[in-house]
Length: 430
Image (cartoon, rainbow, N blue to C red):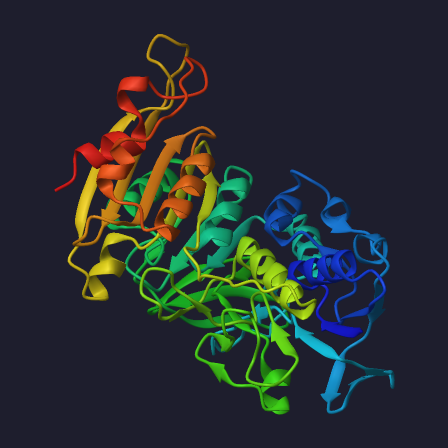
């Protein structure tokens, strides 16, 4: 069996591993057009100097150690074979698109100037970091996770401004009360926020000097365009693969409309577990899960990908935010009559040193099935609760079932047992 995988990111890596595990005698070829394998979610820390760029680059052995072949090349044409830019040609029995995504660059005059950056590759991170050595002022366009995380890492050393077109930072990811807490913290730390504002133009000769925001000129040495991503699906379209608004369409087996052609990761149009409707994801956890399902089905082991809950977490200074499923305004925009449970408590027992505040908001549908949740806390207590909520959403667990959750308790490691954040939020449902 010959399997060709286009893309050497997380989805491509996982497909190669699972296929070689299930079918050791199969021939697996991974074709990656990028120079290296990079841990993208670590890029802000490499830019800020909290880690080194070289440390977020993984060796090719991540793929080749399982017996797969890695080809550094770009696929330009697919017919009965896969043809690459440098003239290589590969036959296949199964083909997997794991082509990922690319940064979206809005149509802003001056976006081509020197020191205007997007972020995707390790080389992007390296160039941004090098440019910081001569910079004092930084403008970040886009108030999403990567932009705000990086702003928090650079604050204090640089004059940082975030410009966001939407009314709030994190507006599409969190409800207003959570967005406002983040904005308050960012301002306290000296970050300039311009929300509900549009960058009209980037000015400079060869190098950027300023940006124009609704008539106001803001001087800057660097502009970082963190304005979202778009699926890399052009090659799939040329091949006749069906695509949607958010990428390549697949069934639950991660199979496309063409025989023996699969897709996984950021290039795929995901489906919401809550509504069954198409949705973007762009999360590494989604890519990995989809890749496992695709690989298993290629190897004759039936598996299905149920859809996404899009669990995500982020750390801004000393607070952590997480969410899974739908936030309230998102659910209401889908016509869902929501019920909400909220709770505010502490991350550990009040008998212990330095317990920190914790805020929880759970979203339920009319059947009182949990369909979403948001958590904010000081410290590193959020991720396990978000992972649990993601599972609960996928299983359509009800408020009453959550109230009966049996959980662990420890003075230093959990909130007080009388006030488990998930259970307590369920008890406050309205």
